[in-house]
Amino acid sequence: SSYKIYEKLGEGTYATVHKGYSLVSKQLVALKRIRMRKSEGAPCTAIREISLLRGLNHANIVKLHDVIYETGSLILVFEFGGNDLRSYMRMHNNRLPMDVVKLFTFQIFRGLEYCHARQILHRDLKPQNLLISKTGDLKLADFGLARSQSVPIRTYSSEVVTLWYRPPDVLLGEKIIMVILISGSGLHSL
Image (cartoon, rainbow, N blue to C red):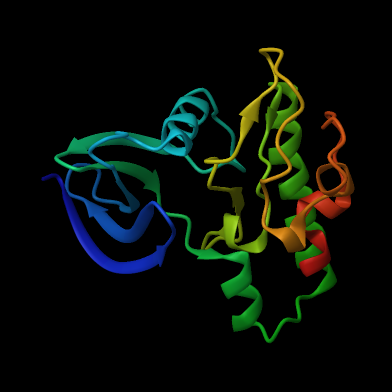
């Protein structure tokens, strides 16, 4: 393998994320190992995340470097993002200077604006999916629940987004429109 695997950073229903190191680029990476079920193959969230991220290139969106298939799993290789916003807030006793709050808010909206201009809805914005680098750059991550609106589809399911971060249109089952909502940006956690 061309990657060294370090400590576990997190775990979800289908995937485990480890800090890693690329022996080729000599940089830290995040390795997201997605478990595949024999009968179903790769989860649709993984396929969706790969297809959307391959087409995105923005300073405030995590970069997908590579996809590796191993027996029983897919490994997505991302740029290393550092801490998520939730951990970052805890490290700072849940208090951030107003200039940092403004910077993070600006970066969230820049990333969302880029996505929305391409008809992509993230649909799972929450502090755990916002990564903060050592240099203070904020990046949107985890596009597993994201959708592209370029293909007409029925109203999206309301079964997305962690409950605490659901915008009103999702909670009420209304048609999702391409409008940035403060409630859906996770900013109330700042």
